[in-house]
Length: 69
Image 1: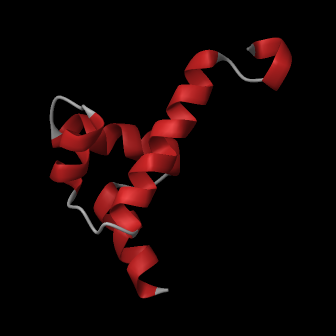
Image 2: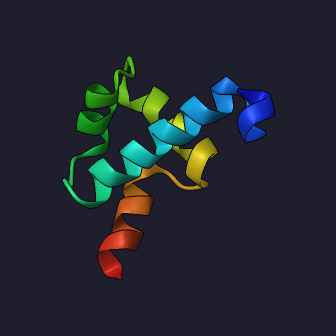
Image 3: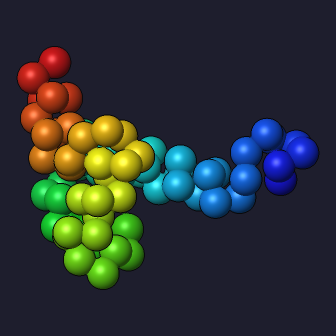
């Protein structure tokens, strides 16, 4: 995968999960806890850490920013 895309498999998976998370938060308006559940995280706290690393914001902050636009 690295040769074909320039990204590792893990980077691709993280990007895909982050994309799905932002879609669920923006379009389906799921709570962070529900989004964590849908995406298979063990709890909302783990999802919040993942989201902050992937997008630079906590899920609720990201969702509020999108809603304000």
